[in-house]
Image (cartoon, rainbow, N blue to C red; front, side):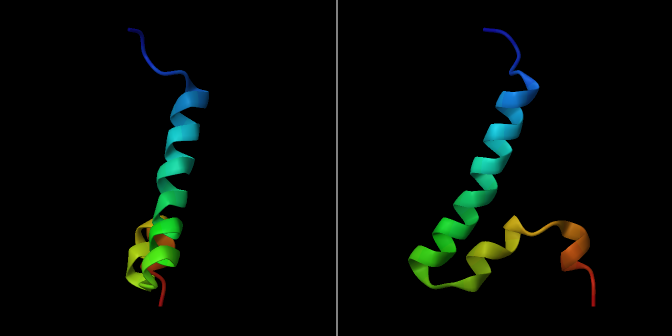
Length: 45
């Protein structure tokens, strides 16, 4: 097996991010969605 293409890595990153939103909507827990937000946004006050 070779290395993943940039497109495959992008697709996987998008899917992982969206899964946080899906999990949060399914459970009704906003905390489940927090990892989907960019770290710079989390550190902003």
